[in-house]
Each structure stands twice: as C-alpha cells, then as structure tokens.
Length: 181
Image (cartoon, rainbow, N blue to C red; front, side, top):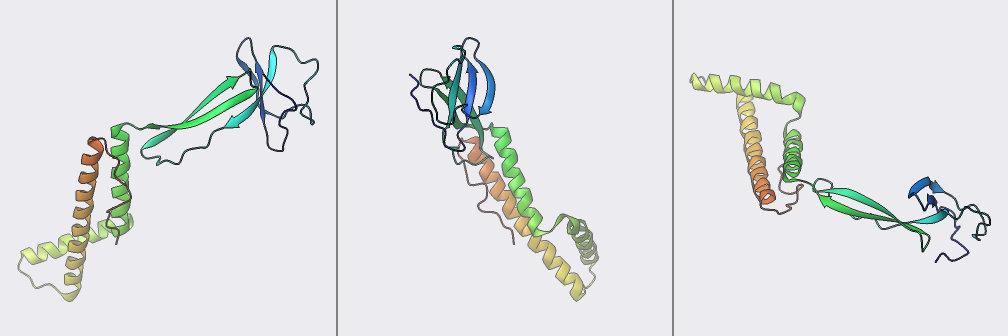
C-alpha cells in the first residue's frame, strides 16, 4: 500500500507507470506534488513509482558484465532497480588476459621502437654468425634484444599459466606477474 507523503527530497526520481499494460510513460520524472501528497484526480491506471536502486557491485569488467533488472512494485509504490554481475565466457576472459600481456610487452619496447630493435638485432645476429667481432654498440644492441626476449618469454609463460587457470574455472589476477620493466 502506497503511503503519503511520498519522498520528494532533491534528486529523487519516479517512474510514471501504466498498471494495465505495464507501460512506462516516463522513466525519470519528479513527483508532481512538492509536498508528496496524494495526487487527486490521477487516472487510477497510472501510478508514480519511486526509483530505488541497489548498490552497483564492485567487479572486474574483464571477468564480469554488469546486469540491471528493473521491477515495478505497484503495491508499495516502488520501482526496484537491482544490479548484479554475469560472468563472461571463457574466450572473452582469455582475450582480456592476452590483452594484458600485450600491454605489458608494449611497456618493454614501445610499438614504434619494436621494428627498429628487431632489424638492428638481426643485423647483429648475422654479423655474429659470420664470426665478425661485434662493436661495443652492437654488443649493447645484442644485450638489449636478449633482455627484451627474456622478459617477453616470462610474460608468455605468465599468460599460459593464466589461461590454464581460466580454463579450469579460476579467476587469476590479470594485472599480476607481468614483467613491465
């Protein structure tokens, strides 16, 4: 049973609802009386339902999707808005883990510098394969390529571990364990 006066504090919104059809006439409106009193002459098929929202849960959007359910409670004059979460499918979660690895690898060598480092590293490799003595600058390049490769291998192993855990139904921390130098 709706009781009066209705809540008219600033920021409170109502849903104007047609009972017979379940139609929402206005989803976010103010209560028409500033004193919250009963609306004389209102069509009995219409009702103002106060919007009451549950707390939005804290969640990792890489694992879960936010859900929202709106339910009219005509007897109590309330429009219930409930938030929850729904777990994403395994392929979506694996993509999120792969993206986390890619972001970590990007910090090791920014994308615009990757091609240059690869070409220089190949040049050093070919010089070394030809038994040529490497210059000090080439040794620095070689050491940089080896260091980056080691970190990328560690990130790859971390990704494989996370994907194995995800496949088993676990939720590993997708931000943990990456080498970001």
